[in-house]
Image (tube, rainbow, N blue to C red; front, side, top):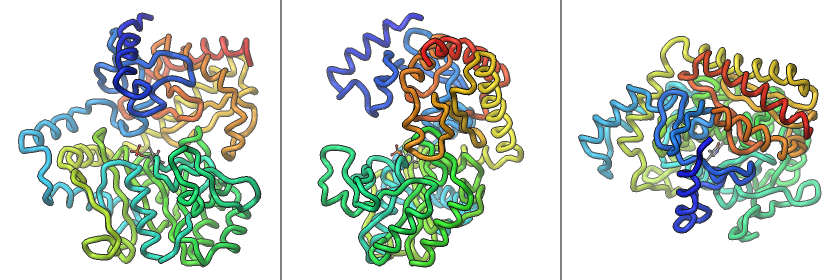
Length: 433
Ligand SMILES: *Cc1c(COP(=O)(O)O)cnc(C)c1O
């Protein structure tokens, strides 16, 4: 496979951009490959600058649920661009997208648009703190909520210690208000709430963890988290930046029948343009400026291009049968991958997880139920698998801890080709597992 142009561009990029990329995982560092510089994309396929074609399961890390360059999305963006790309004043488009989100997501009565998922979680936490007058927040180990200072925190040592920053540049004073507990462990959360409940503003969680591979919640765990937080007047924030409009039109909360107080969105609701949003009960949302005292603002928030891309995407998703189609395709891929592993004779050494159109293969025989389990994966083996898939024209996430997304544009043929490639790649991995 020729990658000389990507190599050249990466060298050039490193001169001007830290690490050559604008988001770390794009650098392919953990899989020991040259990042592919992408030239164009259409449907389920992407093409790099050396002319290689790939079936894409990264889907821009989630947003491209309709596939790339969906005709109605592209048309709407072009039409809007002719009318101007930003006004810094309200538009009908913002009202329309907000109304679509409120109608689709059970717990959301009001919603505020921002420009990224990070901004959404950051703002939701500020709002929860402003609303409750409390300081601490609880998060779960391995959940990613963007690069917000207070959320780039891991558990300290000991049972219920305060967080330590996972990145330089975050003062310990910022991290100490964040308490981290293991996912799917209701007793740990209970202990923390018993001890610090009077000063906890919010519990924030991905209802399905999709940034440490794919970790599914036990339904009783979600129910109990809701119960415990409601009892103590703690704001429950669902970070649905991935699961929103992915698991169902109403996100994970509709899928599992759990009602959070606030929800964060991003990715899909921007149809591939930069966007985020947070919303929830009107009583809480009305604490935001200019209605209330909690300040939050954005020059490009509710940007008209992002709004039309989001509106068109949600319009497509609202059509009957779309989520059934996504589920079928997701199932075909995950079942096919299992079959490929069986044929290659390494099924027992892997852990497969999937839900609707999201899936993952962990290179561990441990049944992954939390972050510590996920860390037992053999990342070297994943790197071998990844490289062999890439070479065969299948573009997976360049990290063991990122998921595969299927879009409506993926065809049966795409998936069959992927499964065939996987059998070859699994055989190669067998040598080292
Ligand atoms: C991607 C992601 C974010 C951050 O969104 P950005 O747009 O990258 O800032 C937050 N939460 C979850 C669950 C995500 O997957």
